Length: 555
Image 1: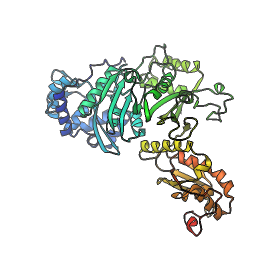
Image 2 (image 1 turned 30 degrees about the horizontal axis):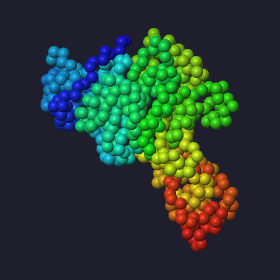
Image 3 (image 1 turned 90 degrees about the vertical axis):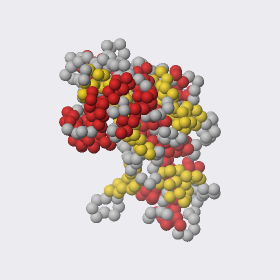
């Protein structure tokens, strides 16, 4: 089936935009309201891309929000008089002037998806309306190459991992419909949003105007529209999908960066240092190719010793010469065939289509030409030191690359920001200096013990993180007791000394064995590092007199 022909993007007509905003508010066209109208069964079906239950659920409901959702998200045509009633200040004629509907005689059909959006951040509840191209669900046809996506899973992920501290300037690079720029507007004094697609910029302009948000929107590739400018925060969900070049496969601007392999991410990494202000941070999503084992044979830095494949090779190469502190977290990995299937289907091709075998072969041939064994997906967090060496006496920038598949609950953006700051602090501390610091166990960390029935001694002790990335760390009795005593009162060295006194363990040996585990817990946000004690004793010192250390340490 051919792709749906693109219509002109929506237009900003100030008086009409104001009327539309008034109508949407009056209709209570919100995510919560729509969810209530749909009911749990239809809402669940819609998440599976099934529209029929939703259409049936809304058919007999006399509610303007039901009509608007039918029209703009489900692609159901309405009588013009019904739209006049749902949008009384705008009317069908005003909606047509904005370019969001077309009139076919007495019938009205949507030209765009206009979806309610709800979220929660540290500043409170968010309720917006997001304009994008109609989905396949509404049109019944594959997406056209210039399609502008609405808010999807990747958009929500990026929004969730972005820190929300107050900043002066923010950049949303590759803004699409503009959702990241809208989020940034809540905690940035000025927001610039860029995209290679003029169509995407038009949709983001309409969305910003409809929600009364001021954005500086510019058209261009990557950092070209912001040449010579620096930002306190850069966020990006770039078009990182790895697509075969010169294989007759259609390109979609929302997902294809026009480079071979994962070169687009290398270009972004090279550009980041010039556009991050001192002390600034960048957060983005990325794909990277993982070379087959033969490509990394003999590399003793390989992250996966079980099969010899080093997923860190490409991210390390991208960032090791940037001068930035960088933390890369691999969250998932796909085999080349699985990756090809995912993105072929995203383009509207299924295994029942004649083009399916050739399309998959093109992808697999492309990966084979570079000996690619897998494709990683994850988060990239970067930070520019204020001035070289001013934050801490480090000889080299931080480059941490780790794989974490688990997920906890709560605000991931705030957690990652704290953990990244802790990693930078740890990089400046040798073991002796670390043990002079105090630490506080994070409130979401619990201890889980596994015992056989009737046994006193646990077979297994685990420290479990309820929020953040939901880490689970195996611990012995000594580590568990040390973590249990981390309430900010004593230094790590003092706690180790006290625990050793209770367990008749040599404190020097214990400190040598524990310091690496403590670093791991601090880096993972399971312990929060506090300031060092003014004259705190080290691990070999005698514990403070009296019962104080023993009271602070679990027996």
